[in-house]
Amino acid sequence: MNKPMHLGELGKREFNRELMTLVVPIALQNLISATVISVDVMMLGVISQSAMAAVSLAGQITFVLTLFYMGMSAGASILTAQYWGKKDTPAIQRILSIACMFSLCISILFFMTSLFVPEALMRLFTTDPELIQYGSRFLQFNSFSYLVMGLSQMYLSVIRSMENAKIGAWISSLCLILNILFNALCIFVLFPSQPELSIAAVALATVLARFIELACCIIHSLTKGSIRFRLPVWDRIEGNLLKDFLQYTLPVQGNYIVWGGALTATAAIIGHVNSDMVAANSIASVVKNLAIVLCGGIAAGGSVLVGKYLGQGDMDKAKYAGNLMCMYAFVFGVVAGCTILVTKPLVYSLVNLNPIAQSYLDGMLYISAYYCVAKSFNATTIAGIFPAGGDSKFGLWCDTVVMWFVILPLSYLCAFVWQVSPIFLYLVISLDEVLKLPIAFMRYRQLKWLNNLTRNFA
Image (cartoon, rainbow, N blue to C red; front, side, top):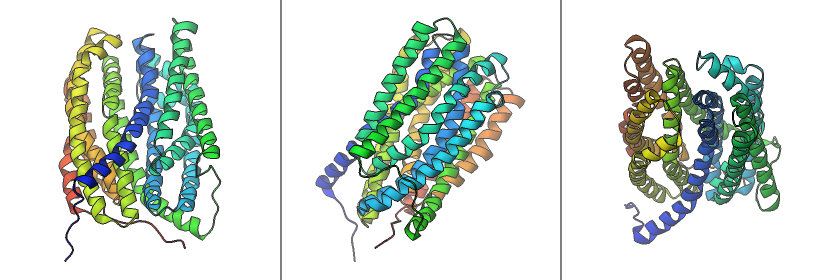
């Protein structure tokens, strides 16, 4: 009878070393990715509350596009991590080509829509004419960044799953610094008292930073990378990998769309309550997203290692890694919540809100602190461990039921029928992660995520 393997202190230290090697750069990259749009919002807050709120709402379109990138990069990462466990680099090269092809098609669709019908997109989130005007201007100029974002994201996610996360952090750091410098030049030097011109210039600064990001990825792939940007080569191997890519990507993609679509719908509900709640929510979202970046690093880094162990056929080591990740998720979730509470005075000093919006923000940050604990565990399991082992359908049905059949109907009733206070409405909107936590824990205990997904192409 085979007994479960216990790795002991030596194995635990080795796993922790591998995990931290991935977590720190991935968390930094996630922080930078979350900061790119956050920088635009926060710096425009110096110009006016309306400019800040408009760009925050317009950023929902970029957020929806990012959901597609997240789904495709997750599918590519699932397969890459497992084939990396087998050291099958040619298969990984083909996976990158497939992911880039799909991401480019989606990018062109969003580019065309944002460029030609930005007003229609903004009316989905607000009826305020000033917010629509400012947001439309931002969307039109920012749409050009969509043409290159997907290619960069696919490349960085694939090499990250090959345990090379540092280069992504370096490239993203460079682009963030450039974006901040460009924003500062536009807002404080060129157009200090012209909100509409500042918004357009800030959008163009983001576009320039994104093009530089892709250029860095191309240079790295040609000089030091083991994979390249190439067109797909359609043969039997490519057909099998495409089938696997779609099999494991579509449920994850559906999960991100269902979850992100629900978040976008809640943003639209908030946008139709009042502009003060929109402004407060834009700041609360920035703070919350920045606080949980380390939690996202645990989820992404841990999923790479779990996938690698599964690709090697080492189920005991994968299970051991999953148990450690769940424990770390709770710890870092508590740290994230405490970070929000500690940094509240700093947040208040950086933004210029009227007294009503300020009171909304105060309550939202308290709610966000508790939200982070459940969010950390759910991200680690639903978006990390489960897809790494091929259990990618669970997140789709879980978010569909919780978000679309519970949270959204309840939020609509609270906002437009019962007309509860904005803080109570925000509390209801934030219940999704709390509801999902016990469900995710039970699913984890079932061990349906322990699967080797690789093929033998020899």
